[in-house]
Image (cartoon, rainbow, N blue to C red; front, side, top):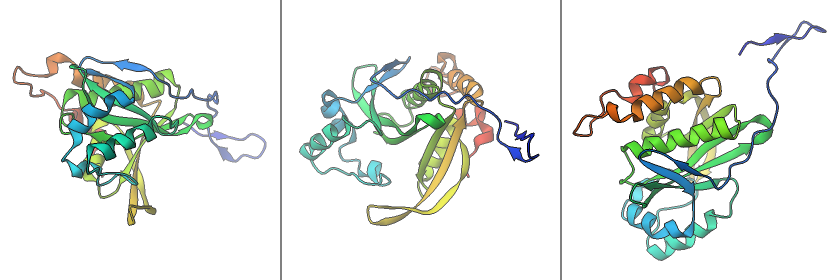
Length: 237
């Protein structure tokens, strides 16, 4: 986006943009080829617990919650997430109808047309699967094309290298690290920031769809071309 020159003073100013506020996330069902994304509900509790129990590493970089020691503790936590509007929580559901992960839309700033995907909980059943990638595609498409955002953010603990690699793989660009940004579970957290812009989305969308296409997978399920290759200009830093 090219900056402008203010005629009255000769000073550089930002380009004029569409300032119509973005819409707020809602209780949509985002259908995909490999599963769907839908509003988090108590009905997802048992499936989610079965998917995440015993996998404490999932929760290490969550700022305020997890891991959960018992199904009762987990079942008490889920209803606390459902009423929240920021973060707005979605369950990721596989073709068999089982909830296998959670993702949220958060840091919602309609006036600036900016939103973040975060609080991502991917169980082992979802990690490194087409559905895991498709869920990110569906949420990004919703954020840009339905809600009308111009900036889509991803941020994570700077020590969380799997998350940083995932951001680059999905097509987010690294913007930098905020030092001593937070205190998370009593520990320092430097935060790595990534973003995807409305102007970048058409190309990222094409890459997502090319990767997700059935013909990108061999009969043994192995990918023929990686999403990292397609989004090579967003290699993690």
